[in-house]
Figure 1 (spheres, rainbow, N blue to C red):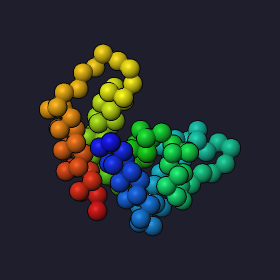
Figure 2 (cartoon, rainbow, N blue to C red):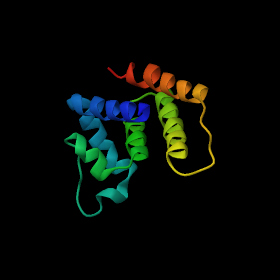
Figure 3 (cartoon, helix red, strand yellow):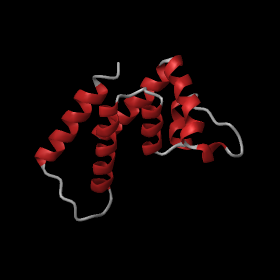
Figure 4 (cartoon, rainbow, N blue to C red):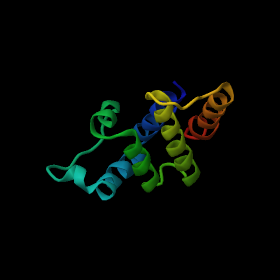
Length: 115
């Protein structure tokens, strides 16, 4: 759930600023040229993120557009990878300390910083 909070917050952060949204849409075809072969695509609403892009792609575009810092990019990539490992059947064990660190890092370094 902490990942959902942070990811939704990131998408909302992009959408709430016309400049950030413009920067995001301008970088998208440069970072993922194949997505725009048939037609130019743009993000205009929250649902577009889920319909058009993977979470990892949103993070990469935000980094390329300088919407997030390099450190936030690293944190988001790491936490997405850990979330994916924990969310899908595997032998990965996540304990209380790892869960607390995951939540603390996302809240302090993404949610509270992107305002």
